[in-house]
Image (cartoon, rainbow, N blue to C red; front, side):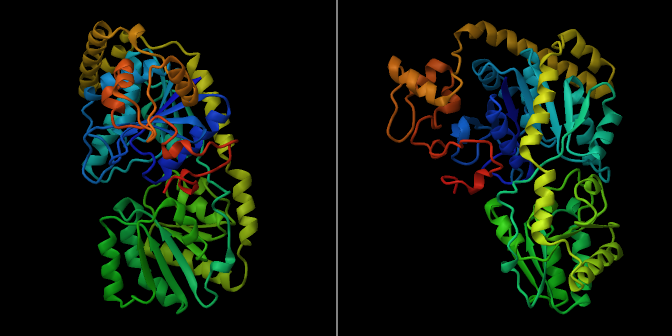
Length: 490
């Protein structure tokens, strides 16, 4: 199969969705599939890049929300580029990631006009504490009405989606963790201190208000307790105010946002990992912490009860008293040596969380979806006409999308779009043999080749050849590796 994954969240950005797409893509390549990723440009990272195992990434230059790392949802400004990519790559299935990614929704939307079936992975749960969340949830619901299959990372997420999409198949495939990277090292711990690690975006939905309230209470429990807080966000000032007010400067260390390849080095310094999320579908941070041998204390919300076995996590009510009780129990276990030994905890995670298993289960979803008939335009209209005002809006968007498709098919017929070889090495060899491309020593391609393929706008500033950093390393097998730990990614 030729698979296209689409999301605003990908390398060089770091996070759970980014790691998921990377690891899943690598393992699918090892299963014999061709995988490309479509995302937006990051700084000067524009064009086409080849990553390990010939994972091909299109970094498309579109206007972004300030500080949000997502493109503006203009819908139709992506049509021409997406059409060329999906046709030239002979894509069989489009897989969108993250409900918060306009890029994912737009690529899936245009794929339907091109008669390509789609899969969507929902990595998050929506809160209903503000009007913005409710509106966003309604828009995502409409966007997914024409999706063939939805994948959720937890059963709570599945239940949430099943209430909105009764007729769309939903499968639960949890995330995994890179156990080759996240390994214990008790020698890094301070024997004279009890170190509590927090690694999170410092935003409201991550429970930073709770953390600010409980932090001085936890410090009062034991004079040996110290905090290391990794992460950044608009709520950081709240934590800094708490530290200032209670004079905890010598017991709380703010690291700010740290690269993913440094997370393990922070985790192994800790004894306890504290998660205060108010809503969460699947928290990869607590799995990474457990893989490093830390005892986890977490709020009992969303899909978190499904993530770790009870001997590795203490679940609490999302309140100050609940978190304080959970940390007390963890401290008592630490003093009485009731913790699961770090290497034993690591082995439990290694056994239960494998990216190879995630890839095989996702592959089964793809095989079922690719056999389904493609929705006709009449079927798509029928689904939206029953969905109120927003459904009528999507009805109009479908009409415009098909009008654009007709115009582009007339201006540039599909048979005039060159088909991309499966491997970029094959592409280079073919171009070299035919004399169609001049490969420069700095790894860039000539504009003649760009124009011939119809990708002038996309790859004008991109990199195709061996001079590109991502071409230096080709993984020989599907190991659970992170792109942020490999040579050439810094």
